[in-house]
Length: 264
Length: 255
Image (cartoon, rainbow over all chains, first blue to last red; front, side):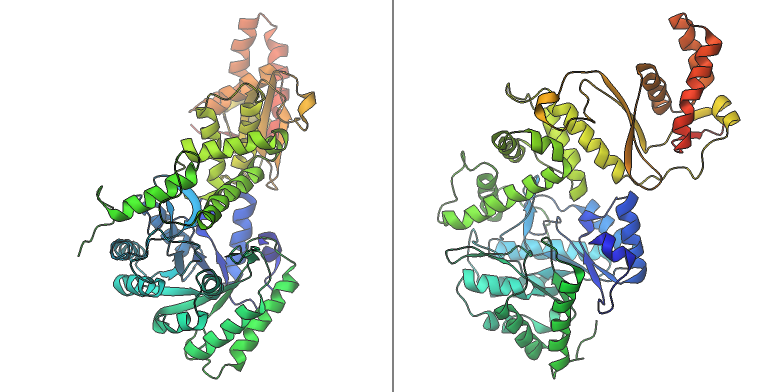
């Protein structure tokens, strides 16, 4: 994908998102491709390894490296997952937070520390989750409490809301309505993979399905348009196919009467 | 309200998270945390396992291909149980996996070339993503012959007991002393030179030296030790360096 995009960025792509942990410290061909891309197309950074809610000490070296990465590529925005991946060693996946007061307080403190180092706000993403070790608070209460206490932004992943609404049996639109709209800085939308007996597993490896499109349309109507990122991590089709999905996003934004309340 | 960014030992959060990841790392020893649905927790076990397995297959494609599925799965499982990977950076995971492989005793039925092959595959990736760039131009012959020389960080002399650069299928792997110069060329592709033992020795000396090595002097010493004719030995050695110089792998130290 990077090699395709380093040649030219198709019209209709306003910004691209990269995981800094895939690119920091890289030289050679990959680094040249990323430089070619970021010279032409605005980048934003979406982290994977910070383990913001995890039991291991906050990796401040990583935060400083991300700060440098943001500056180097003039990336305006940094987001991470409201999740953890490090228990003293990296597990390289997004593990489910216990929804507890202690977790709220602890995670919010760490977000504040990250924002202090970066000198800018960060956004936390609502992750897809299949279970939680403890449910003292509801997911809605948990997310609201963390972003309020940390005073950070929210990256609303519409696909994750859909996946969670199936897996935990709730109303996806009611969930989105309960999110702090004023903190939602951008949206993610993606496809996912179905398991056979009722659970859906989020993989970012498939086309977007109709109910998720519908949810996106309703989200714009409710909170206004937001910059929206189409996530595709593997099974990546030809860029033309992805452009069809991007055009669909643009169509929804164009049709939304609340458009232009927020700008990228 | 606490401003802590670390958890105290008596933290409930710490206990909840530790119980959860202990099970994910080592499901045979640590049961599914009480009260949680086995199938839902199992999604996480599968995700972390598949994720690392897929990444390692990308980093070590030949190794993956040559091990049985059981051996491969056993390795990945051991990685979770016995290793605490520190790097937050995905491309550096190859380094973590190699360090993990080097830390373990191995088993009888694993092939002897497992470690050398893993090292070679790691080296290819290491060079591919290295931040250094080659010198803009090669040295003129006068400088090559008389200056103190250093090797680019993008060229690594490596000695193996197996022909790791040729291993493709299990049955033709014979133990053979193998000396290579693995390097990234000026269009960022990874290539290698097969080396004679003496060339390996010379390049290793240049590579390891802080202040640089004057090749003619090194060759002269070597010729003495080996009881060889100095003039032809030096001429032969300098001729050899030319092919590496042509790839811009050598630079001169300005003293």
